[in-house]
Length: 219
Image 1 (cartoon, rainbow, N blue to C red):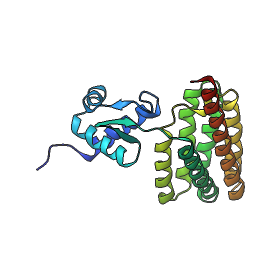
Image 2 (tube, helix red, strand yellow; image 1 turned 120 degrees about the horizontal axis):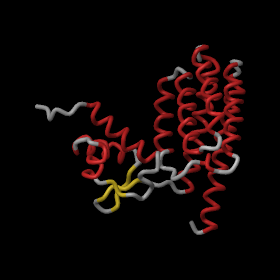
Image 3 (cartoon, rainbow, N blue to C red; image 1 turned 90 degrees about the vertical axis):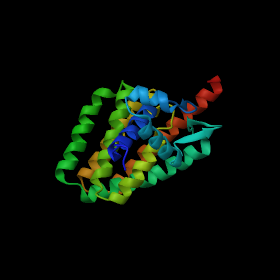
């Protein structure tokens, strides 16, 4: 027997909830209620329930009594996440420099040029930044690496704000993306690896400064 639900419905529910977390509609500590989510997204409660269970097993959600809430990352978890992200992203850039088709490199260049117009719009640049990194992942042509990077980027959705909101960070990000694309275009894997690791390191440094500022101000 079947309840008429398809795997795509559960996947769609999962993607909708994750996107809402990523966009800050639901923030760390917020309670997620099946009925409310089903109404918001126009999805039946069964795929919502299955999506929530999946997110709990991935540590994107945690239990508070009987309720599921959006998880948060403490300082150590944040540091661990950025270490793993730097290693995997650097490897993706290295492989992209070796394996990317000319058309894939052209798409990266086109993304970079289009994103220059977004330096003063942190939310839009954050979305563009995710697309840019995803394109590098795909250009690595390594399915297992892409899977691991997907997991890392799901966890990035738990960060309550974007480091791109810091003053000057937008322009710095574009400059760093330029160095990454230039190295990939040149087929220089070591330079691409180094440029992407530096990019992640600067993003982490910026986030630590933002967090320290919020603690100092009591926010």
